[in-house]
Length: 162
Image (cartoon, rainbow, N blue to C red; front, side, top):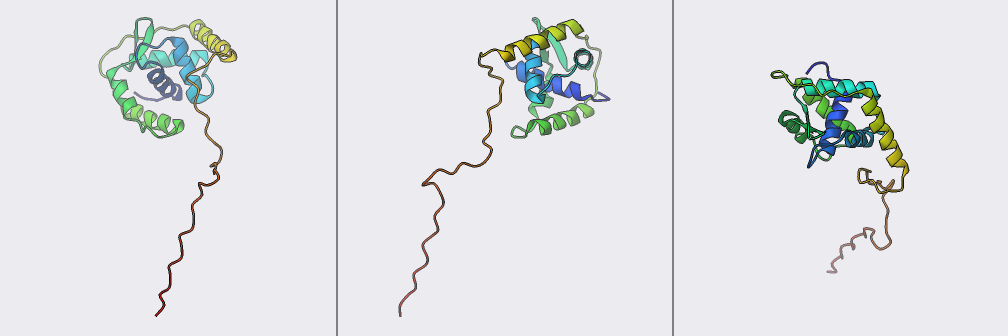
């Protein structure tokens, strides 16, 4: 698949995150993309990326949602687990650059209005007080030392008296 766009990589990883057990709706893919990238790409870029990924045989539409194909699943499962998001995106982009399209695949047709509606619904849901499970856990800024848990100096070796 050449050339590889950043939006393609982001949507591929977002779809894998959103479609763990069932096909992911467009709103869930948008929410996962916002979680990974801290912003959502433009509507037209998302429409074009869905079309490119589907024609490449990496994304399919099923049951009103979107799933990764077996080839895309192997790319995503081969990513380093403990790496930060930018590192994972870079590794996935490298995998996509090595991918060769095999055969003809059906395109996923989205409109800019559908993507706009999903983005607006995501933003409206973010303003509510409901708990969002796709929010990353906050990391502590510095190590917190609790009293009594500091490392002690070892006892000095005794000298022998002769």
